Picture 1 (spheres, rainbow, N blue to C red):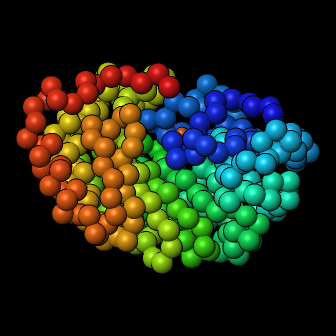
Picture 2: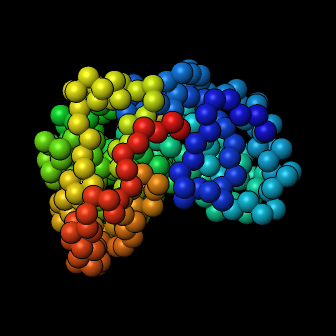
Length: 294
Ligand code: SF4
C-alpha cells in the first residue's frame, strides 16, 4: 500500500485497515490545526491506484480485517460515484468487513445530499468522523472552521437520517476563557439539533496549541488565552448539562484533563459529580500546558 502525506486516524479506528483514497484536506484553513499546513495539497487518488491498494490490503489482511478507514482530512469530499465505487470494491474484495469509515466535513456531507448519502450507506460506508469543534458561530468563524451552526445542524441530521453513524469531536477550550460557557451551550444546542434516531457519539478533546498554527501565533501575540484546567472542567459541565441525548460520550484523548465515558442522559448525574470532584483538585493535579508537535 502507498501512503502520501500525514496519516491520522481516530483512536477508535486503531484496529482498522488503512487504505488511502484522498490526500490532504480540501479546507486546510483551521487556525488550530497543523496536520496538512505544510502540504500535501488535497487530491483524490486515481481510482486505479486505490483499487490496487485495496487488492494488496485484501491479500495481506482481508481474512481478518473487520474495519476499513480511508485516512486523510476529509475523504467524504470525494465525488459520490467514486467513493461508492471504492466502498463496493472494498466489500467485494473483503466480504468480512463490517464497517468502512472516513473523516468528513459538514460541507461534504451536505454536498452529497440525502440521496448521495443513502447511496454511500448502501455501498458500505458506515461511520463519519466529523470535527465539529464547536457549535458557537463566533468561535467557528474565528478559527476559520469553514462552517456555521446552521450547516452543522442540517448536515449532521442529514447523515443520521441516511443511516450513517456519526462521531462528533468537540474541542474544549477553543473559545478561550471569556466565551467558554457560550461555546459549551451553543455546542450542546447544535448537537441536540443534529440528534435523532441513529447512532451518535460525542468525543471530547482539549485544545492544545500546535506548532505552525495561526492559533499559536495569536497566543504569542496575546490575542488568545488558553483556558485553565478548572475553566475546562466548568465548560465540560456546562456542555454535559445541556446535551439531551441519547448519545455516547467519550473523552479518551491525551489532550484531556479527565477521562469521561458514559451514555447521556442516563449517566449525566454521575459524570457531573465526577467533574465537580475534579474541580476541587489543585492545578498541580492536572497535566501542564504544552505546545503540541503532532
Ligand atoms: S481540522 Fe480538519 S478540516 Fe480543519 S484544517 Fe485540519 S484536517 Fe482540515
